[in-house]
Every structure is written in structure tokens, then in C-alpha cells.
Amino acid sequence: MGLIFLIISTACFLIGFCVSVALYRAGRRTAGLNMAFIAIGFVFQCLFLWKRSELHGRCPITSGSEILVFISWSIVIMYFVLGRAFRLSLLGVFTGPIVLFFQAIALTFLATNDPGARPAETLDPWLEMHASMSLLAYGAFALAAIASIMYLLQNRQLKSRHPGRLSRRLPPVKYLADALIRLLIIGQLLMTIGVVSAFFMEKTPSSLHMAASGGVWLLYGAILTYQLFRRQAPRALARCAIVAFSFAVVTLLLI
Image (tube, rainbow, N blue to C red; front, side):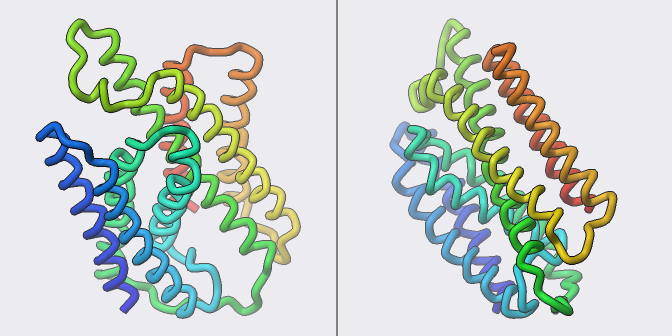
């Protein structure tokens, strides 16, 4: 049943993205319809994670596939919480493809090689805190990367002599630049809670795990520190956010 929930969720994001593209090409508004499909997909994400948590008796992050779904869930919930607050209504259209990509990979591996139940010998609340806060941070970092892509697209459109329809749909570059910084700060705060929680865990994490988590924390910390003191151009910051998230995803899958 859990796999069916993931299939339905992934299908919702796929349909929502395809419908959004079709409506955009037709020159019609897409936000409301896309939001509906994202909301339905989110409900089935929650049902999938609930079934997996029942299977393991703990937070469902026992494999790379589950981690990808959890990150996808984090991206969606961060979008619901922060998208409208940062005036990024079109962010949902850009969120769909990355969630679809992550869940398609997870679905493929779970359908062909599901490792099954992995109950923990003892439940460590600090481990659950470390994992959940870190993955929520990845959701914020993912939105920062998506906002960066939107900024680069809008900046390119504005500098061209013939800005297209996309330029009229995207938020102003100032909103995107401000949202990018705020998303990075929120992600770094969540990541800090996750890293600090690791030091209170009953079982000390492996050196690779600590190096990967610490590396991501240091990378984003360096980006924000440099931004605070040097005020790099938004375009450079956007590129840094995209590279940093790519690095974060790779290190997460390695551990």
C-alpha cells in the first residue's frame, strides 16, 4: 500500500507539471491548478511516509529512496509555509520537476529492491531530531536553489532586448534575491539544530557522516558569511546556492 501512495503522489506532481506547462504555453494562469495537484501529491507523500514509519517503527529515513522522498516532502512543506510569505507564487511550478525527479528515482529503487523493515534496537530522540531537522534544512536549501534558477532566468530575460512571457510571470528580481537570502538563513538555522543534535546522540555518528553534515553546514555558513561582509552580487549568490545544493544532495546520498 505504501508504494501505491508514492505512485499516486508522483503521478500528481507529473500531471500538475504537465498541466502547468500546457496552460503556460496557452497564456493562461497556472498557479491555482498547480497548487491543487501539489496539495494532493503532498497528502499522498504524508500517507507514504506514515506507512513507512509504521513499517520501521521510527522516522522513515532508512534508505536512500526514503531520504529522497523525505526531502521531496520537506521541499513541498517549505513551499506551503514560505512560498506565499516570500511572494513566490510561481515557485510551485518550478518545485514540481525537482520533486518529481527525486520521487521517480525513489520509486524506481523501491519497486525493484525494497530493503523492507529496518526497526531500530532502541529509539534515540536526538537521532530523530538530527535527521528530521537536517532534511527539513535540505528542503529550504532546495527552495533556495529553485529561487536561484528563477532569479537567473528573470535576470537573463530582463537583460535581453525581447523579454518573453516568462518574464511577466516571474517575480521581480528584488523579491527573488531577498527570498534567496532568507531561505538560505532558514536552512542554515535548521541545519545548525541538526548538527548540534548529533553531538547528543547515544551512538556517535560515523566520521563520514559527521564530515558530510559538517561540510554542508560549513559550505552554507561560508556563503552566508561572505554575503554578510562582502555583499556579493545576487547573480553570484544564486550560482553559489545551486552549486551548494548539488553538493549537499551528493553528500547526503553518499552517507
